Every structure is written in structure tokens, then in C-alpha cells.
Image 1 (cartoon, helix red, strand yellow):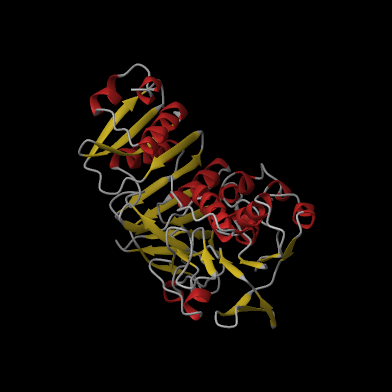
Image 2 (cartoon, rainbow, N blue to C red):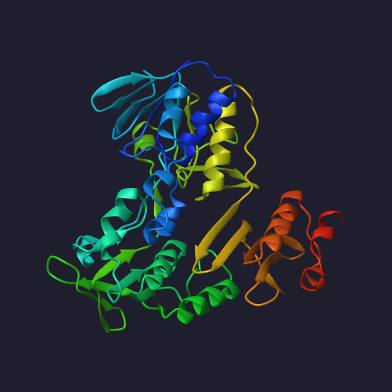
Length: 400
């Protein structure tokens, strides 16, 4: 049985490795359109951009691992089409057959429109190794960078730029940074952190257009102000890579739609990672995180081999900015109350409730609160909010 994996990122690598770990003896072909072997993306906007991590430390596995495991890793080769009837993919003009096909195609950063200057030289996104390599030379002390978008990617890039001595401005068109993903309390904490490091955070402020002829020189804001800039980073979200799936006639729903097993609308095609949406708590979600990419891909690997086990997502995320380690457990959708648990110094956690149900936790430099919160959510336990606020130790709540 030949399994072809399209996409050599975190999910594709996890799926290939798990197939072998579970005893699959057939062929595995993993196709990646980037020239680099499978690598970690989170350090790109942090340690790698800071120069604290070499490229080979990004690699998920030593290059020889794939050959040793009998995985045919083909890099720098883009798949251009899928024929689900013939069960083939076309890659660099070659037609390759499959018994099972796994789409781990990931996502692509949204770019600023060319009509407002997004195609000017000096305008970057942060997603791939090539993206970061292309911008590293820009990060020189005293230079001015405008970061469009106050989400986690933009804020992580802002932290790196600030640490390297640049003049940093963050533009966020929403009333507050992190509005889409976090409570006002978390936004306030993170905003104060950036401002303490000299970053200018402009909220309720959009980008009208970038200035410059061939290369960006500044930005005209929606309030009429003009800001000078030596370069610009766009952190305005990502879009799931669904083009191949759409071309193959697969069902799409905020990504490549799968069932609880990870199977798409074609019984021989599976999907996992940023590009895949799946059933969750009576609805459908798509998770953009390393944890989900690994767990979902490993579940798909088992189901390709006949396990028949539904994927049970356990959402968790993290962000590193300056000395802040922000750890997030659960999904806060639909919360109606925030409970604050304060520790010493800059240690604090925000607990999201909907009625009496604990939904999620944002923990700032508080790994204990994160671990307990994550376990409570996974166990379906919801301590009374007053207990979260006042308990001297959270750990006993796991046994309550």
C-alpha cells in the first residue's frame, strides 16, 4: 500500500513518522514544495530571527532519518493536480499513483493587496524559512519597522525587532490587539509589555496605503497620519491551502472538510493540520497550532491503517515575547466571564468561563496554572470561579 503525503511540514512529517512507528511496511512518499527538509515554524519569528538558533536546529528530524525510515522525501516539488478517480497526483509533470493520499498542505499568509503597496520591495510576511531569511538583513538597530496586524505573529516579530534595537510600530485596525483570540485582560497585559519595551501600539488604526515607488518608505494611516518606515511586516492572518482539494472536487468548509477520522469527502483522501477542518463539539473547527498538526496527523496515520478512532482535539497554544511565556489551553469561544488569578510579580492567569463551564486559560509566566487548567478542561471539570481566584494551590482541584 502506497501512501502519498502532500505537504512536508509539521503535520506531514508527523504523519509519515507515525505510519512507520505503527508498523506500516508499504511505500511512503512525502512531497514538499519548499527546498528545506521538514522544520519547525514557531522559532522562525523568535529564536531564528534573533540569530539564537541555526537552521539545522529547526529541522524536525535529522535528514538521514527519512531515508532510514524508508520515506521517500521529495523536496522543492509542487503538486499541481489530483485525479481522485485514477488515484494519482501530478508533481513536476510526473504522475504518481497512491492507495491513500494525505493532504497536509498547511496555510499561506495573507499579503497586503498590491493596490495599497503590498508588492513594494521591503514588505514581508512571516511564514516560511525563505520569508525570514529574506528579511533578516533588515533587522539593524535604529531602523524603522511598521508591523501591520496585532495578532501573535505580528507581536512576536515586534518583540524581536524591539530586542534588536529597532524603532517599532504596530498597527491594529481593531479596537485592541489580540481582539480575535483573547480577552481584554490578555490584550492589556501584552500591550503594556510591548509599550514598556518602547513599541508604539496603535489600535483602531488601519493602513490606508504604503508609500514609496519601488521600495516602501512609509505608510499612510486611515486617520491621515504618515509614518516613515524602512520596511514593513504584514501579520494579518493565514489562509488554508485548499486549492488542490478544490481542484479534486473535495468538500471545503473553512478548510478541507474531514470527518472525525480525518477522512475527506473522498474515502481514499485524508487531511490534517492547518488546512483541515473537522467536527468538534457539535460544530466544525480548524486549528492553527503545532499541537493540533501533530496530534491530528498521528490520528490520521492510525486511521489510514484501520484504527477507526475519532480524533479528539485538545487545543493548546503558546507565544514567546520578550521574557513572557504565554501558554493557552482550550478555546475561549462563547465566554461570558473572566476570572483573574494573580501570582507574584508578572505572573498572572486569566480563566475563561461560559456560565459555570471552564473553557480556556491564558497563563502568563505561570506554567502551573496552564498545566492544571489544561488538565481540568480535558477532564471536563469546572471549579467554581471563586476557587480559582483564592485557592493557594490549584493542583488539588485535579482530584476534587
